[in-house]
Each structure stands twice: as C-alpha cells, then as structure tokens.
Length: 283
Length: 312
Image 1 (cartoon, chains in turn red, cyan):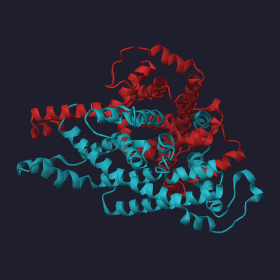
Image 2: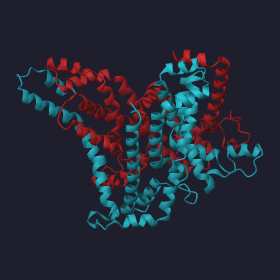
Image 3: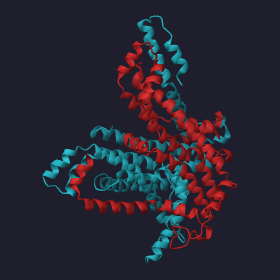
C-alpha cells in the first residue's frame, strides 16, 4: 500500500534517478570496506598505489590470510574466545531476561511495579560510570581476567528485559488463567506456553545481543589482561599495534574480524532491523 | 530449563487454600525476577554505591581496602581546576554537534529511501554495515584512508587540486571533526531505520489530503513528516547525546586521545586515571560527573516525553 501511495507522488523517472543517486552514495559509503577487502588481497607494495587499484593487479590473498591465521597472533584462539563469550552471554541473557519479563508481566506479587521501576532506573546508569568500582569488585572476587566475568556482565544487562517485556505483556492473560485451571504452575506455563509464543522476539533479541557481544571492545579491554583470553576485538587491536606497518595483513585481519558478523547479519537482517525499529535500541 | 519444576507442577496437588496459593504466587514472582534483580544489585547498584564512596577518597585499589579513608570533596575541587578534564568535557560538548548533523542526514535518507526510491530493504542493509562491523577494524581502515601523506583520501584531494589537504587524524584541529565524521558514518544506519519505522506510523490519509490540496513535496515534508516525527527525533537526540558522552572505544582505538590531547573525552580520562595512573578515587570523581551529566539528560528526556507523545 505504501508503494502505491508513493508511486502516485513521484514519477517513475524521478524515482529511478533518486535510486541511482542513493546507489552512488551507497557505494561511496561502503568504500572503506571495499578498500579494506581490496588491500587484504594484494602485496604490501601495491597497497598505497594511487589511483587505487580496487581490483588488485597482483594477487597475494592466500599468503596474506595465511600469515594472519597461522602467524604469531593466534587468530583461531581469538575467534574461539569470541564465539565462547558471545554465545554464553547471549544464552544467559535470554534466560535471565525472559524470566524477568515473565515475572514482571504475568505473575502478581506485591512490590512488582516498584521493583520494575528500580530495574528501569538502573538502565539509566551508564556502564562507563561504574567501570572503576566494578573493576575493583572484579579483582577482589576473582572475576577479573576471566571469561565468566565478561559473560556475567553482558548476561545481566537489563535491556533484554525491557524488549521482551513488551512481548510478554502483549500475550493475553487468558492463556495463563486456563493453564492454571488445568493445574499448571508458573514454570510450566513459562516454558511450555509463553516461550514458544515469544520465540520470534527472543530470536531478534538473541541476534542483537550476539552482535553487541561480539563487537564489544570496552568490556574485554577493561576486564581482561591475559592474551590467551583475548576476544577477536582485543586480538585484532594487538595485531594492528604489532603489524601496523603491514597494511595488507592488518586489512586481512580486519576482514577476518568482520566476516562472521556479516554472515550473522545477512542471515538475520530482518530480525536485526525489526529489533532496532522496535525498541529504538542502540548498541 | 524448566523441567524439574514442570514435573512438580504436574503432580496432583491437595486443594490449596487461598492464602497458600497467594504465597506460591509471590514466591514464583521473586523466583522469576530474582536472577535479574541479583544482577542489577551486584553489577550496578553496589558498584554505584562504591563509586560515590571512592569519589570521596584519594585511594588507589593497589594499596588495599585498609588504606581506604574518606577525605572529603577534594577530588571534585581538583576536577574544577584540572585543565585536561576541562578539555575533555569541552571535546564531549563539541562532539554533540555530530548528533543533529547525523540525524539530519539520516532523516533525508529515510525520506528518500522509504518514499522515493526502489529497494528500501537493500539500502537499509547497506547503511547498517558499519554498525555491525568491529570498531577496531573500522578504526584501522579509517586511519589508513585518512593517512596524511599516503592515504587515498588525501591522494584524491591532491589529484583534484587541493594544495596541502588537511592532515585529518594527525592534526589537532582536524582530529575531532574526523572522529565526528566516523561517528556519523557508524550511526547512520541505526538512525535511518528508526526514522523509517517512525514514518510508518504517520497516517497515510494526511498525505492524501495534502495531495488533494496540491501541496508540494517540500510543504508535505515540513508540514506533515517533520512535525509528526518529533517524538522519533527527540528520542534519537536523547540517545545520541547519551551515547556521545559515553563514547570511549572509538577514541581509544582511533586516536588514543591524541594528537596532543585533542580528542580526549570524559570516559577516556576516566580510563587514564583509573586504569593507567591507578588513581581510583580521582577516576571515581570523574565517573560521578559523567553519571550526573547522563542523569540530567535522562531527566530532560523524561520531561520531554511527558510533553510529546510517548514512544512505544
């Protein structure tokens, strides 16, 4: 219906021209990525040739990527660490957020609204402001320099509760009442009835949480120091610091750091875009 | 994850009295919100209380808790006189300019993409790319592209006849604007998607009525689209302001606060004092300032939301 209304307003020709202009702007917009990919495929001496050789004249792709993946930097380990931290963070966050969203919408108990306000209020407290005391706490209780520490920090983020709460609130209480008449307890209702109903919302949140967790630089940067625990972001940074003069290699590493998320994004683009429009969330 | 409880729930229960059922309901409520509440207490509320205590000390965490003594508001007095912190605060304020500029670019593209071009979902994906990319990788590419002597951007500028093109990230006068440009580039996709979602809520018949009256595209934009998007714009403005004050990773990986302290921001100073110089007390005082700023913006949002339509 939108196309119809819009079609009436702008002529096909002007529509084509605007599309063309947007395509051109889109290409310029993506040039940094194209340059990154192109530089990762060529020998170092060709990287700064001007005019830019977007399609390499001399190819050295396999050697470049081999040096990144089989070199001293240990990219396979960084990848594994990132996968581990991101997957566990996402799982923990889904369980904690979905349970809280259910509790805040479908169970009646005194203090519920007040407690929800407390949780809402903590969302306004910037994580950056509490980094210093959290660091002190982490060092005293042994969570500093552990993956567990990162997973807990991301997993207990309150954002998921807000997102999922909207969906749980949208489900009629009749489901719950009739299940309760059949003798089902809250855990059965939560696991068997509600969770399947909000599956799409959970998928959306899971993809967003995974992306944020994978791309998070600040938390691992502050709370990790052991190189063996580095996530891809820290590993990539260390690699760039050490090989700063070898731009073809740094670009090969950059491409390697981006590709997994690009795949996740292409597969889940609908969910990502829905999630962003819905909550107006910003990573 | 609910299996053991599920089993319990299915066994036939003795007829429960009203009050015991009520107790079970309360218990269930706390079991469900318990983990989240615990997380909020451990990872946010306790650190917040500690933050306020630390900010009144000149403690360093290395010396151990027994050296932790309250020493009054000295840190805050020192902050007022600290020229570096003042500069960082100023940089944050200058960076706020990127928010309305980014919003204007996003709004323009949202209108074009959703109403006047083909392939809207394609463009949404294109403009979202920087958002899903690793900030480290993005920063590295920008450093190279904007490299003063052999970067392709200056290569292009020299080729089209610009003498002495700016040194971008290497020049204290251009470094901060360069950072802002990168921020706008990264955030365009998110703002764009939120604007497009906001535009879907504008009733179509308004445009149809305007068409009947023979209104031009410009009039329709300024009389319908723009005013009806006020809640969306306000939301983007507030989240943008907050995100700007919280920025750290982009500064750390792109410029490390330099050159000559020209791109340092509040959180960068917190990091320097708290984690490099190990001045826990002083860094905590800076964090309190950050906290108060964000709190003030949040109150602004709260006041504004009461005035304008509440955002779903």
